[in-house]
Length: 374
Ligand code: GTP
Ligand code: MG
Image 1 (cartoon, protein in one colour):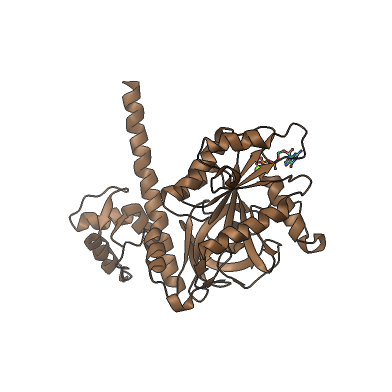
Image 2 (cartoon, protein in one colour):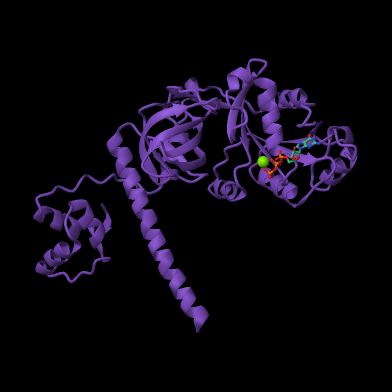
C-alpha cells in the first residue's frame, strides 16, 4: 500500500488505532487516528507485528479505466467475431420508450418463454432474422452523462422516440445531443401513430432543425413511424437496426476475459448486491473474479434477461450477476481478473480511494459552508 491512514492500518492488522498510535510514538512519530502513513511507516509497523506487507501492484490500481482501456488496446485481430449491436432507446418523458421496449419484446419473445414479461427489464436481447440485438432502456440521464464523461460509449445505435402528437421536447433535444456526442448513428421512431392527433410531418420538420433530416428530404436519417401500443412498425424498425448495425461492422473477441459496464444495480434482501451488466468484450463466466466500480467479488450466479441461470455471457449480452461485496453504480465499469487475489486488491484499494475522496469532499464542503456563513 502506498498510503493508509492509522485507522485503516489498524483495521487491517486487527488492532486498536490507539495501539498503532502508541507504537508510532515509540518510533518517534506523533500521529492522529486519521493521519496518512506512507509506505515506509506502514512497513515499519507491520514489521513490528511480524506481518509482511503484500506486494504492491505497480500500476495505479485505483484506476479501473486504465485496466479497461489497456485491455481494449490489446486487440487480437484474429479472434474478432461479429457481435450484436447494443441499441439504446432515448427520448422525452412519456413518449413511449418503455412501451417500445415491451412491444419489441412481445413481438420477438413468445409469452411462455418470457415468463414474467410484465416485470421491469432495463436491458434484454432479441433475435431478428437469426441476428441478435441488445436493447437498453435509457439509463437515468445522470448515469448516461457519467458514462459519456468517461468516454464509455456503451451503445452502438440510438433510437430517439418522439411522440407524433407531442413533437420535439426538451429531453428529445437532450437525447439527440447525447447521441451526437457519442457519435452513434441515430434512428428516429415516430411513436403513437395510432393517435388521431398524430402529426409525423411536424415531427420531421422539428427534427430537421436539429440536424436530423429524413431521406425523403435529402438527408440521411432513418425515420420509422410506429405505434408501440398497437405493435405497428416494429418489424420495420428492427430491420432498420440490423441494416445500420451491418454498416458499423461491430466486432468483439469472445475468447478474452470480460469487460463491460453496469446498467443498473440494487441491493436485494435475499441475494445481496445484484447488478445488471452489459458485457462489451470477452466472455463472462460464473466464478470469474471481478471488480465492478468500487465493488468486487466473484460472479456467484448469472441470469439472462429471461431470468434463466446461465454459465457464460458473450459480447453485447446483458446479464444480471450476484456475488459482489457492495452495490456498484450505473455507469461503473467492470473488469475480470485472472485471480481472485488481484481482484480483491484492486477492489479494496479502489473502495479505499473512494472513502478518501469522500472524506476530502466532506472537508471541502465544510469549508464552503464556512465561507457561506461569513
Ligand atoms: P418515461 O420512462 O416516464 O420517460 O416514459 P416512457 O417514454 O417510457 O413512456 P411509456 O412507455 O411509459 O409510455 C407513456 C404513455 O404513453 C403510456 O400511457 C403508454 O401507454 C402511452 N403510449 C406509449 N406508446 C404509445 C402508442 O404507440 N400509442 C398510444 N396511443 N399511446 C402510447
Ligand atoms: Mg420508461
